[in-house]
Length: 245
Image 1 (cartoon, rainbow, N blue to C red):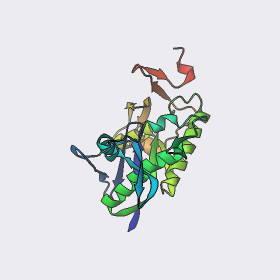
Image 2 (image 1 turned 30 degrees about the horizontal axis):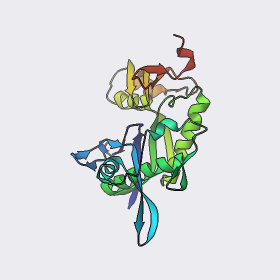
Image 3 (image 1 turned 45 degrees about the horizontal axis):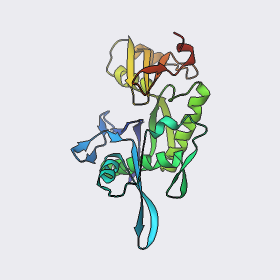
Image 4 (image 1 turned 45 degrees about the vertical axis):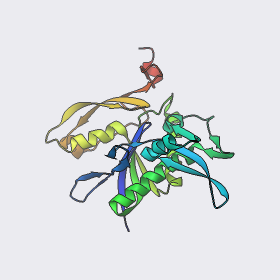
């Protein structure tokens, strides 16, 4: 089995995974669901304690299978969602699942491992490296250090899931790269990334001349407005400098 690098969007609600062919064409992984095939993989985890050959152990499902197993179970196990939203928390390190402590990174890794294995089966190649999108500011991140902390935890989860090499890219910048590839002139564009945990709004200059000169992205203070969704559905700024406006 050959190896390839792919792109992954690990989202708070949904995730997706794709590869780019040598001809520049992009192929999204497709996943089986009750309603048919889908390219949106729910970022959800369901765990049950099962007994096989007289030995009890914890079994997990993710994505569409997690929902189907949860609905079919007579005795419900643990259904966990929105794990990405807790990456900035320095107090939520682990939780107890059927008497065993499991770290947040281990729980996320179970979703990422399933994504990797399903992509390998579809693409016919080993997935060892990936470019991964990340929000400009993670949920409830008040400083760049908070987002760096969250990114470090997410990197560890990818390592546990079997990825050897991970490169992170800001999600709105990744969208800009794709749009820029279609241009024959420079433009100033507004990008809106509406996510389940955060929403980013970015102004970027793109185009062949910008690409030729090279683009410098200042991650310590990007020109991006990042918002965190509240329980009431409103969007509050994740950047303290914006909250008084």
